[in-house]
Length: 362
Ligand code: BGC
Image (cartoon, rainbow, N blue to C red; front, side):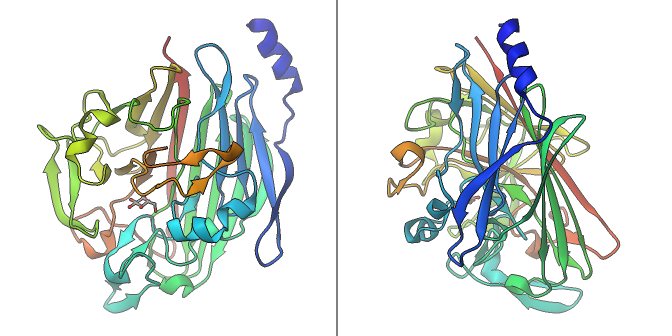
């Protein structure tokens, strides 16, 4: 073991590798950056949407496997079928993650109307969210490992949001097999901001994620209406299928939740970097621990995947083929005065971090 990791260590270069990933529909070149650590763990990220396209981590036999859903080429993320389905595989989400009811909010007495892209609501930023734009990329390295810094200027009025918002996201692959995502943002007008990543994980090799065992340290979740808009109520999870305070397989109670899990959990801890979730996949032995500075976690079980999309290696993505753990502020916060505020003001810097730590249980 020691020998192979030393051999691998000597081949790890200081900066991530980059390769062409195709062209956008309007002809712009897209790059794919691959960050590697001494264990051979590898994450590939494109500057189109900041999308994590693949993430190779070892299983209990030391065999590397890809634990995220995605495509081999940028055109996979731009096909009509993909855009119609709107799963946001692996993407950076903004300016506002999850839904804003009716695409409307009022800020400092002024009413704003956003691009509506989910019925009458705005989902994940609007028609062209941060997942569908080209980011400026700077590969590099830090004391924590190889990095990819992505920057995007979201202009005043883009998708209806006020203010020029400058967003920087740094992905870091650490020597101990964590993928760290650091978000910063500044604005020149007050605006709602809620940034996250929309990776779909499947830590095993099965076609669904129902056997994954999940823990979420949250005593409450935000209740939603039929359009998945929070009612404002924070309800206790105790005695319900939403109680993941102790480990439960995803499939154990999913049948009791119409459509599957697609809810925001109110994390018990809110200060500093705190626990958001742990996941264990028994057949591979892989584990994933999520920690964040955010107060909420959207646990989404790929309910709307229906087998129409074929991903890497021709793999068909059916219902529950992957799950997302999106660290975030709560959905529709701009219309919910009792939720933690998502308003960023000029002079302030938004700072948010999330780590996905991989490991093994043998
Ligand atoms: C939302 C789902 C949505 C999915 C893909 C999730 O973050 O909560 O309702 O279908 O993203 O768009």
